[in-house]
Image (cartoon, rainbow, N blue to C red; front, top):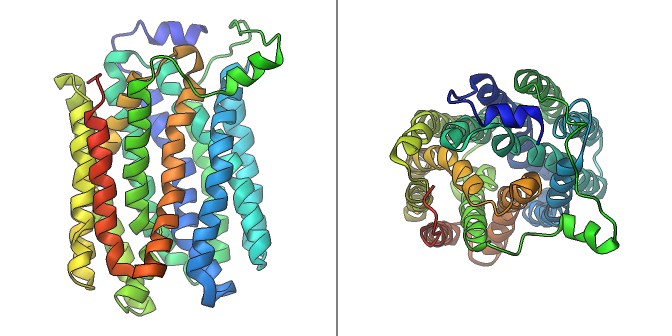
Length: 414
C-alpha cells in the first residue's frame, strides 16, 4: 500500500481537496459523454440518416455496450497493477483523456455513419479508462467513515454532469461540430484540474502480485467469485436504475419532437427546462444525502428508495403527451437521482470483496453505469419501434422498481 493510502485512512478529517478533485474529475468525463451520447450524437445521426435514426441510435448503443463491457474491467485491472512516479490512476486518466480529445475531433469532422460508429466504439475504451481509474480514488484514499461524503462529491458531479450536459448540449443542436469541440476541450481542462487537486503520490515501491502463469493473468482480469452476494446485487440494482433512467434520457430529444410533436425551438426550451429542474433538485439532494447517510449509518435503504422514486416519476409521461408531464418527471427523478448518486458510490465501495483489486471490481460495478446508459436506449428503441413511445414509460417504472428490490436484498447496510 502506498504512503498516500496509509496516511489518508488514518486521518479523521475528510480530505476536502480530494473531494473536489473527484467532483471535477467526474464532470470532466461525464458532461462530454452525456452531451455527445444524449444530444449531439443523436442530432448528428439524424442529419446523416433521418429515416433510420431510431434504429441507428439503438445500434450505436449496442456496439458501445459490447466494447464497454470488456474495456471497463480491463482498464480497471491495468490501473490496479500500474506502478509509476505519478501513481497508478493518474497515467490512465491523462492518456485516456487525450485520446478522447482526438476521437471527438475526428467524430466532429466526418459524415459517414459507419465510421462514426467505429469511432464511438473506440471512444468507449478511452472513457472507461478514465472512469475506472477515477472512482478507485475512493477506496484508495478515503477512510470508511467518510465514504458517504466522498460519494456525495462524486454524486454531485454525476448530477451536474447528467443534467448539465443536456442544458449545454441543447444550445449546440444546430452547431454540432462546434459543440463536440467544446466538450473535447472541456474534458482535458477539467481532468487536469481534478488531478492537480487529488495529487496522487507515486507508488513505485508498492508491491504487486506477480503473474507467473497464463492463468494468473486471466485471473487478474476476472470478476470476483468469493463473498460476492452483495456485490452483484449492487451491480444489477445499479444497472437497472441507470438503464431505466436512460431509456428516457437517451430518447429525450425524440420524446419532445416525435411523441409530443414540438418544433425545434420548443424542444430546445423544454430540454433546457427539464435539465435545469433535474440539475437543481439533484444538487440540493446530492449535497445533503451523503453526509446524512454517514451520520445515520445506513446506505442500503436510501439507495433502494431513491431507485424506486425515479421509476415513479417516469410513469407520468404515460398519461399524456404534453411537456408538463416531463416537467413532473424531471422534478421527481431529479430528487431521486440526486440522492441516489450521493449515496450509491459509498454502498458499492462497502460491498467490494477485495481492496487489492478495487479499481477492477469498481470497474465492474461502474460497468453498470456504462451499460445502463447504453442498454437503456437499446431497450427503449425496441419498445418504441414495436409499441410506440407511450409504452416505454411504464416499462421504465417496472425496471426501476425491480432495481430497488435488488438493493433491498443486500445484507450490508454500510
